[in-house]
Amino acid sequence: MIEKAEFDKFADEYHELHKTNIAISGEDPEFFAEYKIRDVSILLGDCNSKGFRILDFGTGVGNSVPHFRHYFPEADIACVDVSEKSLAIAYERFAQYAEFHLFDGEALPFEDCSFDLVFAACVFHHIPHERHVALLREWHRVLKPEGTAVVFEHNPWNPLTVRAVNTCPFDENAELISAPRFRASFCQAGFGKAAINYRLFVPGALRWLRPLERWTKWCPLGAQYLLFTRK
Image: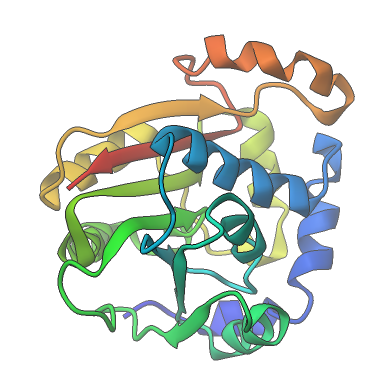
């Protein structure tokens, strides 16, 4: 079972702690929440969001929810987390946009083949690595045939990312995961070989250079990475 105490402990002050921790990047928490969902929308292309079902795994206080609503305006959004306190805050903020479910850390509370997309934003480094394959098998179970799995994670090969994680109060028990290792976990869980895009090479002060990052997704030095595959 995933330990929920650390998530409950920081729920009320998550936004301010996150804002302080990422100040070196020159961006605010909204930037980091929004860019991930924008990337997902680009990956999926011209997706008709009507009847499209999204699972936000480890939603926390719900920072991804309004961006999912923006980029997938007609989708059904379900959010799960082990932290009751975080879910309560997310519900208070975005009850009109999504449904919220408490997760026991073992079995997702949904039927087989329920979702078109399962998504997690920097969640798995909080979960013991030996639990990853079992949880990804749950992802595989609840995804529809040809459904998409997308994970964003901090890159342990980027020194600034490692510094940020090591000084972040709510990452006190974090264990970062390299993209190749995580890809192997997806394969063990029954998915095909996942693609990897490395992200966030340019700080906020030089954001005008970010269009060039489309040419650097292969380089394993970005601050974060996204990994995506289909069932």
